Image (cartoon, rainbow, N blue to C red):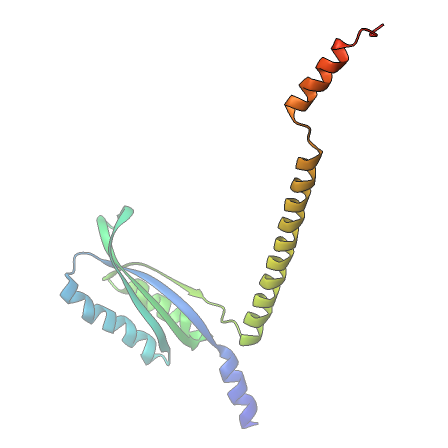
Length: 165
């Protein structure tokens, strides 16, 4: 009974990726507490942050809330499926974050990765065989081609003969 509940709990945990755009009204020094606040929201709800990346300050394609620049911050985390909506709502209410997007990220098993590599190797082998066939075909067609000089010589011989009629 206890083992079944543990397995259910494990199945409820999923891997997510969140990209957030932090307003540029804050300096580089003021970013650290904002990122800690974001991390705290995730960890307080039982999430585990697996990867964190700062992409730096970038110019936006269009103004968002009258800002033309923003700091991009990428997070990957594992959390219970039901808590994602709550976290998303909390992030939407933060004034520091201009935009954010949370997407579920599929985690591939080693078995799936091995199958994908095997499939890729088969395609590469077929492609190599096809290229070899094309090269061989090109060589045979080159042998069949007659030089223009040879054609001219044959034509001259035919025209030089007096028995044309």
